[in-house]
Length: 211
Image 1: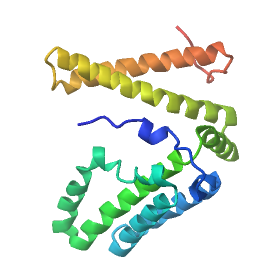
Image 2 (image 1 turned 180 degrees about the vertical axis):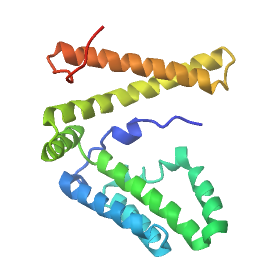
Image 3 (image 1 turned 45 degrees about the vertical axis):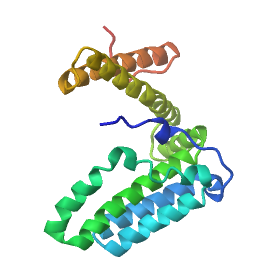
């Protein structure tokens, strides 16, 4: 299975479209409303198809560079669609088998659109302010998100290197060894990040101790 390119998820696509200029809070409200409605209407084919059509139109209004990426997730997750159809068709009927994949893909594309039409710094600042509203330290939330956005590509690159190294040794199908090596690399990356933050004076959680 191909590894999902993190660049397709977290890198913003520059543009001056209406969607690019829409405030972050408005994008979040639309995504939240779609998610809440989907929790109740996910088996209604009219809602699923309508939400998918809405996401298609929003991509179309986001500019040609963004619109061309509407089907990009299917390059990696196309196999989920036949699985959902194969499960729901005999159990719930063809209309539910149409509604559920449509709803899931629409939500996926809308969430992805928020990321690729929003500058990373704007996204980090917005989530930091949201964290402050619910009682979390803004600086800690922003640092955690920035670390995640920076670390994800490193983890994916590590996965690729581990798979290529295993394939070079004739271990094309060694999922346990590959996963173990990836976990070790991820833990080492997390420890390095923690040491760097500690060196910059970020306070540690109470009760934590270094060996």
